[in-house]
Image: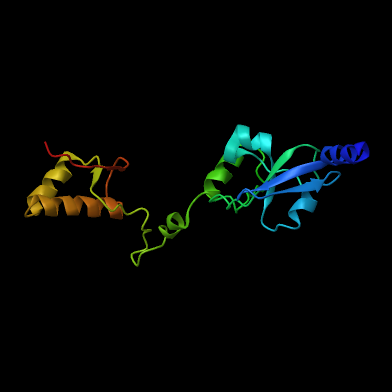
Length: 189
């Protein structure tokens, strides 16, 4: 009778307990790996009970070659994949970009979206749509006083005078200074 009790205690020393999410448990003889346990349960991962207790969902599953320890509790869980984790990061190393500033420029160019690239299409006028602003724009020009007075006298309204000044600037007929464009938003007070 004493021999029977000894065999039972030895068996418990050589097994590990695996628990499923529904509470069902089964015992596995130990020298085994995590891969051998998960082959019978597809789409499941094996976790150590201590890591689950300490880290919760942040716990990492055991590696497939990890040896299971006797007298240890393991959890067999089927977790849905986290959103955005299905795409691995792709890192490309190129010898063309040698300095840090070149690498930064390459990174900024690679992150340019398709909508940014589509904004550089040419209009029938020949000007790119990216250079043509969509909202109100303030342009500062240096116009000689005589020319400004002549444009104001020839035009019927201030709007027509402004259009003529802009036309002069577009054709390059301005005699001095560079134009500087600036976006302006008007605030009601």
